[in-house]
Length: 114
Length: 110
Image (cartoon, rainbow over all chains, first blue to last red; front, side, top):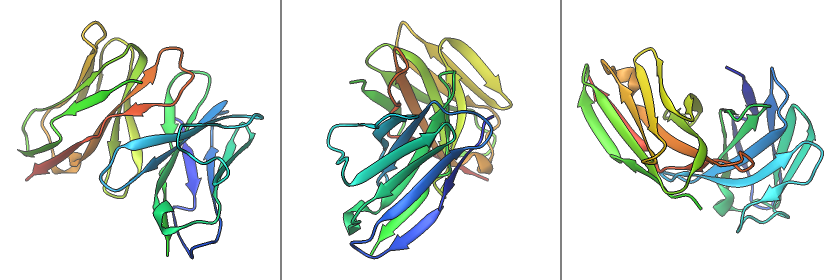
């Protein structure tokens, strides 16, 4: 199947700093990328949907000014957690979808905010 | 919004047993995914279904659109199958992200 990478896989940062997570589709063009968040022992929750070249659509309750999403090309989307706080500590996963409905998941990024 | 229910939440079985995990959803969908999440967190897509049945190795997935129900079966289970199995549905139209079940934590004991 298609490959989606995420970088970094783990990041530890101090409270108040910003963290950028990259999601790349390696062997296909992703017209749509999705960002999910998973709290410990909880289900994944969709945060936002991004289409290449347009603004992301955020789910209800997700602060767009805190979680900045940029989908600058058909193979790259970035999620920036701005002014991170300990409650932002979570597992962030992206997925990418090409022309078909199948989604391919990145390996995830574990964010720990001290 | 679609409600996705999985059962059981936790399942412990002996190596070699036949495993069934169930998923029910409340609203019509365009596709259903079965995902596998290992302890490190990474997610692998096992199947995407819109009708019928698919088989890959020891894994079988079925879906009944009328009953809004899907099952994931594992034959001849092995300890390496231990993982969280997640059902996720894609709404009709395919424009939105997936809605996930809470997952089934499977442990296969040798």
